[in-house]
Image (cartoon, rainbow over all chains, first blue to last red):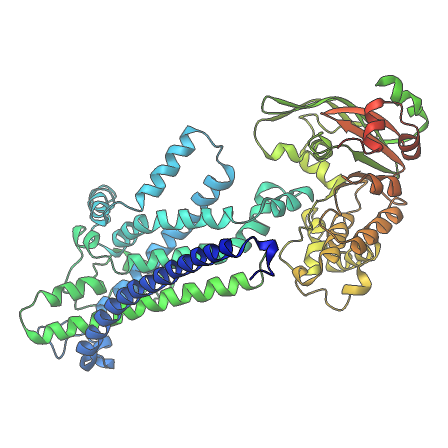
Length: 314
Length: 264
């Protein structure tokens, strides 16, 4: 000890060592506590999903995916529900993605920073926290009644688009903000106009982040039930919407937009509310499919983020 | 000040650009105060001075980068090619930036391929012919002394290059559109000594074809490299002269103190 005179007297050193080991102990305790909490949260989630999957497993067959709902649980399937979900999501994405990205670009790159843009910013952020049933009421009044879209796929898609929009706007802005000023200036210094700079640089560099936001938004929308019940989604649909492709000119048909529909969570909700035990199994099976869809979408988001970020760093 | 500039006999140099009574404000902060400067054609002119003296601000007036941000405004003129005041609101900043290139403090290549980085300026100017672009990219990379190092991997990402190579790539990117003036904003401050000396050699060669205006925090670099040097202090142009004259026999007391290392 005495050889380390430059570190102070030996007594000082023991004190410092005690204090260091005390801090290290706190460090370790916190790490353990954090890990335990994390495990608990994951355990609950995994247990819930597993329990549902095990319950629904016997019903998960090809027939389940290709059968319409029926009054006998063994014959009932989720055909109209997953087709409905897919079509509603398609409309949601087509409406929310361009609107959301354009709004994000405008707010981040074009809008001057003043009280108005500040107000819009606060509102957009708060929109993400509005209960989804409120969107349902708005949609019932606006899309369904005023625009006379009725209780159709178009109404549902637009309603969920409203729900997804704030998420897309906020992630677009964050992705744009992450691009350093030096890259923007490099493009401007070569004579690029603002739009050129955004199109050639900002959008490609932020596409990973934007896509992640879009998918996370959509995977929130895919499980929404309340706003769709509000606008009058049916729980028993034993037919598919008209096909989007037709045999004669102009080959594309948009009749399906006006069709009544059901979606996965509503089908589940319907089955859960039935007294027969067998329908509960159907609900668990449909739930498993829905969770699988959501996890798949989130997985895709993670993959896309990785793919797009790989070649891009600054 | 006017007397000191006249010591140089400004009329004898052929100006590429001439700064006349330039004032610049960030919001209400008066950053450049009645600055006058001549940038001689096909020479290297260095701007030196302590941090915050306004040298980078002055440099960024030349390609109107200040226009990108709100609340900046200019008074005065920068006459380019004895013909046009590039600060005039009637002049499109995009046109100015197509004629005046810039190399930044830190290498800032686009996260694209080496080829695309150099080709970008050409594409912005509307060039579509692949053969023309190929040709000009090669020429720019050769002028930037980078061709031999990258000719076999033009399609690989620019970020795979070292810092010095990235900065030479940025120079090639600026050269590709054949600008008449290139602005260098402390181009070697993020580089090691070897990369720095490569860039300095390169600039010395480039002045055959293009006028160079460089901001540097290193007096040695200005002394090594520049034909003319301007010393700025607190937003004012204190002294402008041939580099040798400015360093060896400064006319102004502040200049003398700065170049002798007494402050800054």
